[in-house]
Length: 132
Figure 1 (cartoon, rainbow, N blue to C red):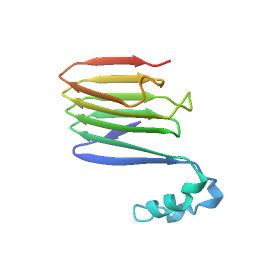
Figure 2: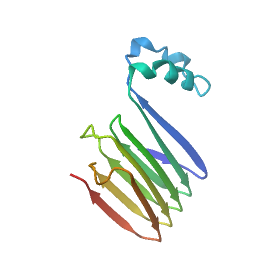
Figure 3: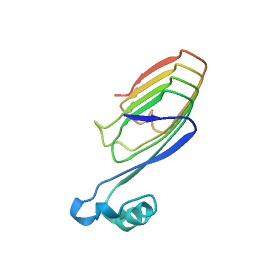
Figure 4: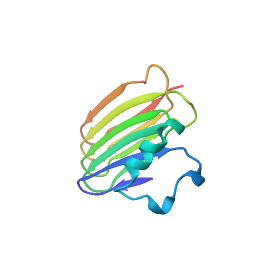
């Protein structure tokens, strides 16, 4: 679960390498890009960006290695859930929520949901999307 506070922008990098190939003690904000670049030929990399501006926002991402998700939550008490870890389908999505107390829950991926761009404006909105 990712909980981010006021005006925070975070990039999440998920990559698969054997732990023996990386000196985990050397990884920090200054070296991570060089380490990722050095292993790109050996792994699949996923880049997801979560930007949350407000209080008590929540983003839970359970994604496969071929998923690229951009999430923007502007307001308070917003929740975003994205689960497509049960498939190896390549997926790109962008979801923007502006308002308070909104819930976006997306499960699954398919050819229809690939390239999804969702903009939600308002308060107390709940969206459940299932892609099977």
